[in-house]
Amino acid sequence: MSVTLIAAVVALVLGHLAQSLAASLRHFGWYDDWLRWIDSRFPEGSFWRGRWGIVIALLPPLLAVGLFQLALVEPLIGLGGLVFAIFILFYAWGPRDLDLDVEALAGARDGAARREAAARLWPDGATPALDGGSLVEAVFRSALRRWFGVLFWFLVLGPIGALGYRLTALAAEGEASRRLPGETLAGARTLLALLDWPVAQLLTLALALVGNFDTVLGAWREAGGASFSLDNRFLGAVARASVKCELAEEAADYVNESGVPGQAVALAAGGEVPELRDAMSLVWRSLLVWLAVLALFVIAGFVA
Picture 1: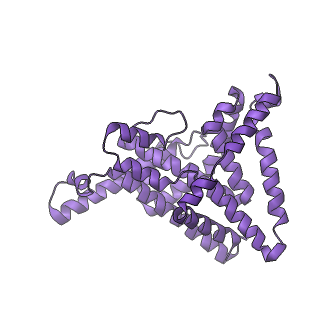
Picture 2: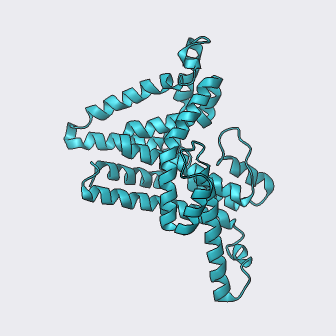
Picture 3: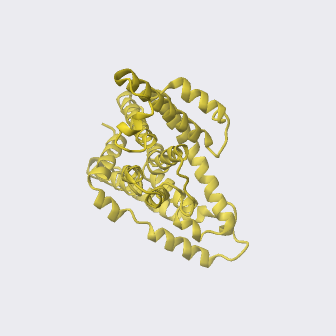
């Protein structure tokens, strides 16, 4: 099997079976300190305070990871490189567990608890919306940031790609974004949008395969998915359409089996928010499609 596939599967399994370990390891306080230190060293008008100043913050940690990545290719028949790849992917994954956050949101019983749970799916400082469509978009946006973006760039560039994506996301939307000057923050967000675009397109393709292909294709076209738009709004439109289609099919099945009107489906689910349940189901099925395609690439010899 490919080192890439082994690392992806092991990091994913560890993230779900060793959640306390994940919570204890996935801390990026050092990155906040690093950004604060850089900001204190560069005056107004410097490259750091320009559009692509974020490169100054990204290069040193990524260079260090890249050197380790190269140094560990050969020792112990590549075992050192495998362990290092698993560690970096595990570290960059998340950092919060998406399943737990969605479960907390679905199980919230009052408005205050629901707003608090929903805030974990929104970028730092953003005000969450509690309507079904917005929650669906939030689940898929979080899946893109926490799972698929890290996995895609790990597949493309190895550990340096996974960590690079995570650090860019933290600089653009996390607490670390508060440390950045205005122009530097804008550049970080543009870089994140560039990194997200191919991931969002491939995630849309996976949704088309696991859901209703015509529905996904129609929503993708209407939202401008065929154009190179860095806002990636097509993913939200596709997510809404896919979940709506899933709910409609479930309601039809429920009526056919019981004769009860389709509105009873939500009650039959034990009071949970049906959109969230179906959104997470689609996210998991899409991830399995990605891993299956990766396995096929390994078999075909396209992935090392």
